[in-house]
Length: 223
Image: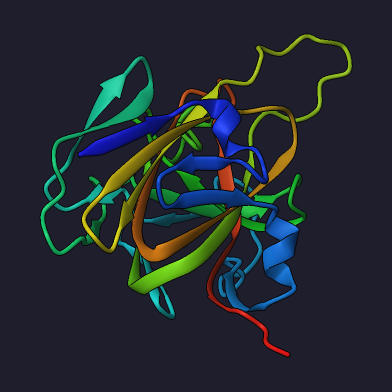
C-alpha cells in the first residue's frame, strides 16, 4: 500500500504519514552517523565521471531504480513505474543514463547527478533522472541535501519544480511525499521507528537536481 502526504507534511516537526517523521537535517548531524559525499572520486567539472553501474558506499547502494521497476521518458524526465521486487535492490539504468558525479558549485564539492533520458553528456540530461537508495539495514533516520536551480535574482530562469520521494520501510509499507523545490541547497531529514530500507527520488525541476551529503546509520546519543 502506498501512503501519500502533502508537501506541507514534509516540514520539520510535522509528521509525514504514519511512521515517517520529518526532522531538521542539522539535528541528525549532532548524532553519530555515516555520510556519503561522493568524494572518493577526483573532483572534475561537468560532465564529470559517468557512472554506468550502481554506486556502493558502506551500508548503502544507489541505483537508477529498484529491481522490478521500469523508467520511462516523461517530457525529458525519468518517471519510475512498476512494483519493486522483494527484497529491495537498487539497479543501474542503460549505459549513459544512470549517474554522473562531478564538482557542483552549489555544494562546493562532488555531487551525484541522476541522469535523465537525454543522457549524461548533455547538460539537460544531468539531474533530470531518478535515483534509488537501498540500505543494508533498516535506518531509524536518514538525511540528504538536494540542489535545484541556482539563485536567480533577475528572475530569468524557470521556477524550480518538485521532487517525489517514495520511502519503503522495514514492514513493507510505502510512503510517498512531494517536496516543492526552491533555489539553492535544500536539506532534509526523516525519522522512522520501524526503519527505512529504501527510497526512490524523481523530479521535475527544469535545471535538474543534484544530491549530496546522504546521512544514514544514525546512532542516538545517550547520557
